[in-house]
Length: 123
Image 1: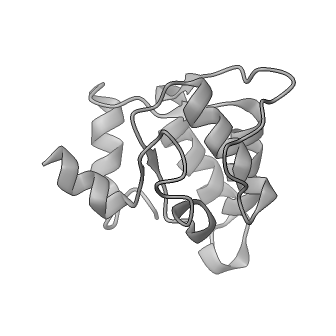
Image 2 (image 1 turned 180 degrees about the horizontal axis):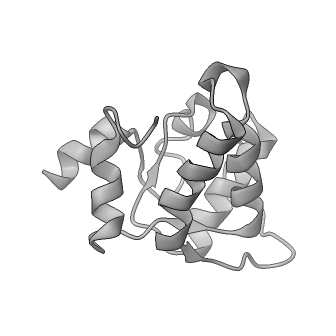
C-alpha cells in the first residue's frame, strides 16, 4: 500500500503534526476517483484504508466561489482544483507526482515539488 512502502514516512509526518495536508470537497472526490484506477490495483477495502490513514489528519479548506482565474492553465483541468486548494489554504508547497502539475513549476507563487524533492527539503 502507498503509506507502507517508499512513501511510508509521510504518514508519520502528519500523524505527529509536523505537516498538515490540505483537502477540500473536490480534492477528496478526485483522490477517491484516482485511487480506483486499475493501475493502483487497490481493492475497495484498501482504498478506504488509505483514506482513513490520511483524511483524519487533513485540514479542510473551503474554496472561494467562484474560483479565481489561475495565473497559468493546467493541461489537465481536473488537476486545477489542487492548485486552487494550495493557494486558498496558503500551502507552503504543492507536493505531487502528477506531470501536469509539475509542468507548472515556476508559473505560480507556490513551489510545486515532487515527494523526493520535498523530503530532501525537510532533511
